[in-house]
Length: 233
Image 1 (cartoon, rainbow, N blue to C red):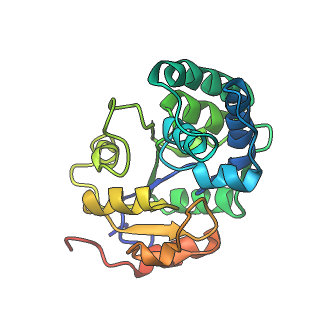
Image 2: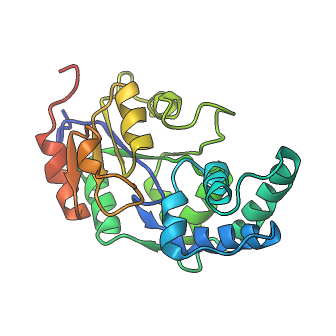
């Protein structure tokens, strides 16, 4: 257990989109840019939110499937980098931190807990967004959906295992915080307790996803973590 706080974890990892940052506006703008290039109609912000989760490729696949059907592979592979390039150039126009994020991250750091960022977003985009929002200094590592290569993003546990390997701690006891089924499944597969926020991008009731706790504001996170029994204790 951490010596300064009743929170029984050495490190806490966080998802990015829909957890720390409401990025739907910028993701939606980039998605609509790609859809128009593909000859499809742009979608509403609420529709764009429903396609987020799983990374850029999954977002575009979902949007195309719901708006005219999939593209041939060669056209899709040509379109995807155009979406990514547009997003990278407009990554923090509308994106904002959810209430309480900064104070919560500082509170955990003050308690001696290491913080990591683990997202299915491309690593370079995650780094850029965190820099734009001045969050980078909070995290000892930033891990993206492509950090370990194809097929190892959430809901696979690989990224969370890498988070623990990079911690520098001999046997870190960790928890993970996210907003979707990708996060809950990845944490559970990695043997970590998971806290889900109920204000993110999940298209299902997060209370049905087997989380150890569900919160509605980040001022609830530290108390929630303190109540979770350390796995393996």
